[in-house]
Length: 68
Image 1 (cartoon, rainbow, N blue to C red):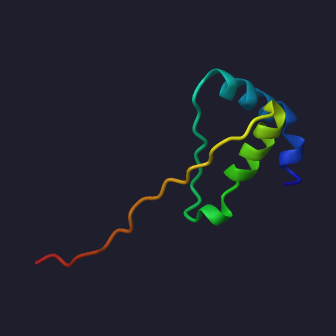
Image 2 (image 1 turned 120 degrees about the vertical axis):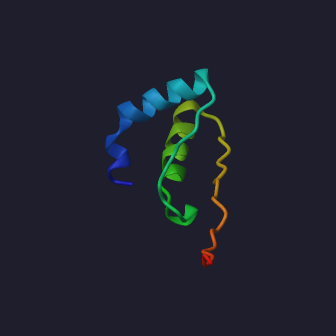
């Protein structure tokens, strides 16, 4: 959160982009509970004065199988 507060210009640029186009924020965090995108989205929503929908996309769990 402290670092995000230093990123006013980046948040402003992202807010401008979101107002013009559909956008997707990507992250490598496997667990959405530890993802920073929610904080970025909240900052952008505050900047442009709207609510944003956050949808966390998950990859199905993979299972290892033995080869014959």
